Image 1: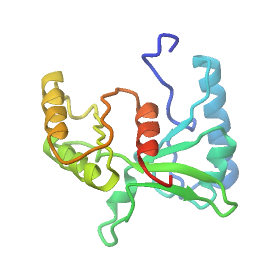
Image 2 (image 1 turned 90 degrees about the horizontal axis):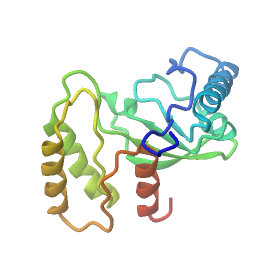
Image 3 (image 1 turned 90 degrees about the vertical axis):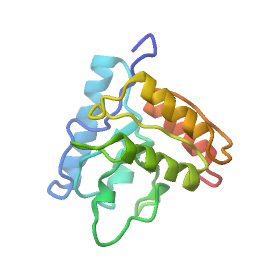
Image 4 (image 1 turned 180 degrees about the vertical axis):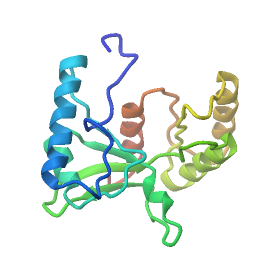
Length: 182
């Protein structure tokens, strides 16, 4: 942590099923997650990383913001087979007006192929004018494969910004800065 090679993300104590818990339980998830992060790592989590959570209630932006979290990442909203979720990066606004910068990550899960993730990255290049490459532990992608994908990304279209980083919080900052109006 002190050397800057690790960053704490998560935003909650565990990754809950948000359809089943109350607002108070969500608050406790954030409070106890932040207390643990502060105690064990010396800093609060600023990124809510909930890749496999079901249910994102209207009060979540407010609860996360009040808990010190200002960025949110998931991929679960892509699982709808009837109605495509229309946004890749957006300001999610709760009913009280709290806003949290939110992005949809690359697909995750068992058996996700590198080609599928690369296709997703190309879509991001077009939609966000920002080239992001998310690695997943399931991919077991080699450094040589990552470099080949990065060179391919550099050769496609016009992009105002390219960054190779292993830090999710830094990628979120870069992505937000590249979006006019966010």
